[in-house]
Amino acid sequence: MATLPSVSVIIPCYNEEATIGLVLDALYNQTYPRDRLEVVIADGLSSDGTREKISEFSHHHSNLKVIVVDNQRRIIPAALNVAVAAAGGEVILRLDAHAVPDEQYVERSVQNLLDGKGDNIGGIWLIQPGSSDWIGRSIAAAAGHPFGVGDALYRYASEPGLVDTVPFGAFFRATFERIGKFDESLLTNEDYEFNARLRQGGGRIYLDPAIRSKYYARPDLASLARQYWRYGYWKFRMLRRYPNTLRWRQALPPLFVAGLAALILTAPFLPVARTALWLVAALYLLVLIAGSLPTALRSRDLRLALGTPLAIMTMHISWGSGFLYSIFARKE
Image (cartoon, rainbow, N blue to C red):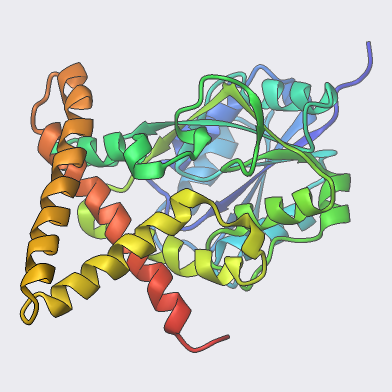
């Protein structure tokens, strides 16, 4: 039997005391042979108990190699690059410190690579609440709802196939060396940009819904708004380089926010704008509430019928506003 390729799991990390232990435990319990697996954590000089958690884990699980390297720049693409530089695996598998993989995550990812299904292999997120209150549960529901994420299949796909991007991904080191490093001029969207280069070079990105990880959503609307504002801001910066990667789901939020802003500004002066504003707002809310009711009923929690629309609105408006701001901000 041929020897399985060695795998380096790379994890960018900063102040992840609450979840880093869950991720390491999940990696320790993978079905992939432990002697063919290593974990490389690029830590942005955490100020909480993250490093102590990692040290404690290593002390009690010495048969899993765990390497910690400093990420002096404290941005995700830089963390990924320094982690790859320290990694020794033939396969690079990228995870986050707040995403907990199923026990067959590594095995299935590698098998898809060996079967030639794609050059970058990824799976789906099973969104978990970042807090136990109804807002936290609503945000988790919104983060997996088609109204919130459009056709981002890694949020809810049930069938395998080729896609534009995957949230993390597993690829041979040779692919990384051919495509080049993660772009450190982008503070987010580094995965999408990497996959855009991969596709331009003839590579394929394959999503297998059997590859699963639990992803912990933001705990409140304020942190959700900051997250999606960043996503929108850096998405436009990425699209300046790859305009042909724009998808309909990415164009709708900035168009909606721009239209809403125009109606709000003109409503005091134009009766037709006032009428249009009320109609647009009412229709938008009605659609969101109607789309959220099935989730609330399945969960037997009617508060989600209010919270999920609030979360989706936060995502749309924050993402669209960040995107528009990036258009008019000073060019870098």
